[in-house]
Length: 130
Image 1 (tube, rainbow, N blue to C red):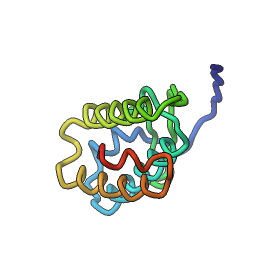
Image 2: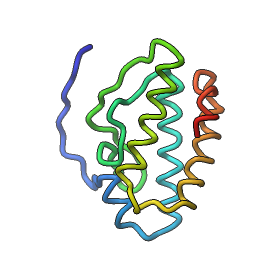
Image 3: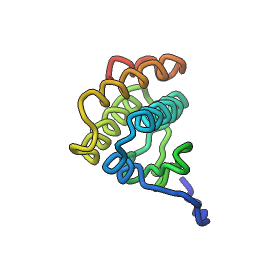
Image 4: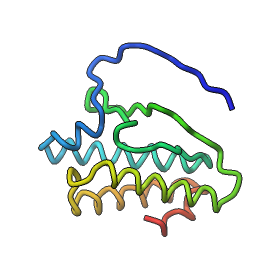
């Protein structure tokens, strides 16, 4: 595989880890989790896995857009690899969030994620992993 490095200053960039630890606005947090679910479903829907997908490697820009950094993205050659990569990413998100995301928010995120996975034929088999 090849790596490409793009460098530019991004105004209003915030680590999503900092966001989930510091933000107390429930509506804004819900929007973040919706956007995260959309991106994760799209990634896996294309048969790709992010080998280092955790909150520190996802930026939240202008409280509107996600930017994925440290993109160690691979194509999953088999469904079993896609499933394993998906489970790994879920564990990494939970591990980096620690206590910054409560059980209610995880349920909300998982509901959003199931709905988004259902939109992608290649990702539908992952719904039972959520």
